[in-house]
Image 1 (cartoon, rainbow, N blue to C red):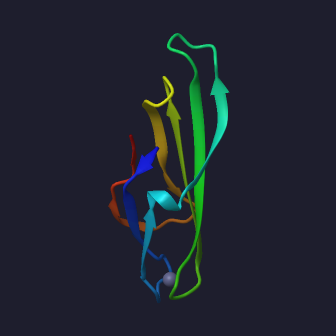
Image 2: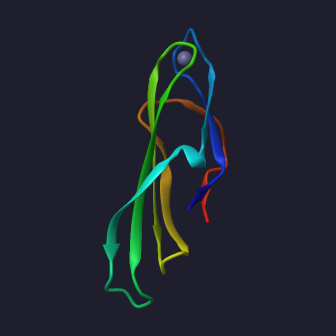
Length: 96
Ligand SMILES: [Zn+2]
């Protein structure tokens, strides 16, 4: 599971609104399972959040991927990924 939050600055030059994403905003799906592992299954999860800047309506998509192996134990994580280049001000998103 994911915890923490992230803040980034809107990349619109005339805006620079601070946008916040909370781990609970992500909608995670179990996208794959590898059942043939030594300690049981490994499961992969992918989640994303669609965001709209409240100030200028710029749209953002933030995604995060992680795996659990064995199930319930955080193994690998890759994220957060944002579909536009932004300045990240704070990021405590992590899996546990
Ligand atoms: Zn903005």
